[in-house]
Length: 339
Image 1 (cartoon, helix red, strand yellow):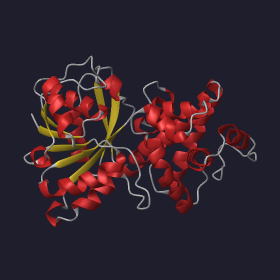
Image 2 (image 1 turned 180 degrees about the vertical axis):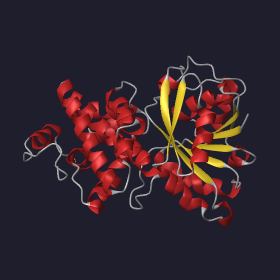
Image 3 (image 1 turned 30 degrees about the vertical axis):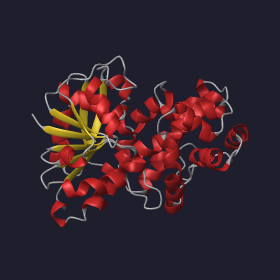
Image 4 (image 1 turned 90 degrees about the vertical axis):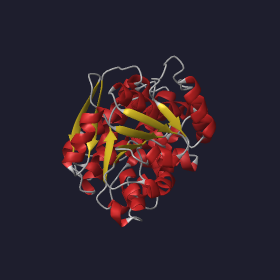
């Protein structure tokens, strides 16, 4: 049995906390909201999973010191835009032997750091934490299915293989199969960029386009992600795996995908900001667009789908006009490195 804290009481944090309790670990869930932590403790039900009674063994707190001190693992399950601020707050309470498991997906704008790199950049404030291990856990795992114990598979990524295997062992059970991967940069890049392509898949559906268009966006979207990843030194196999094509497929096709649903609304004519508000949860694809634009410029790679979505979401371009421009781009070979 391990002592584990899950930082973040959103849908993914709660689904993972339940899984870990069912794996016979002692789990504390932290929420920055005292009101939310108290409600969860009193009801053991999450507002978005009202039909699921959470295990009584699961404890809740809004005190970060309580959540962190004495834990073996700390799971970072806050939205990507809060990873840095939460990392700053938790650093004073960390212990050198602990392992941080990051499940947030994103690339920080301007710094262009992945979420595990953001965490690492903050904990360096304490030199004694230099050997603390950070593992990225990523893959095609909607919380809505994990909370129901539907079979899923995910990737535990860390250059330190022993740390990756530890996380693999802790999270694995008969409904969650965990693989290990040492290509941390590739795994995290896929986790961030697939959300952008999922926006495009939803947008195409909102415009009334069919399965052909969605398949094209998903496939060509992965071509863009892998092209960027290879330029960044990632391993090509990662893009064909669970964190790559697997996560892209589920995010770009599922009714549970907030990115797909946001794109769907935009395609139906809802302004981008209003679409985000209607989804009611963080839309990480929108958050990832600024970093994607900086990365494609920095590494000088073509990402026309991502650029098109940025024009629609952040510049107010008309979706149908942008779709037409994508279809009329100059003709190229599918496997030409410059495509």
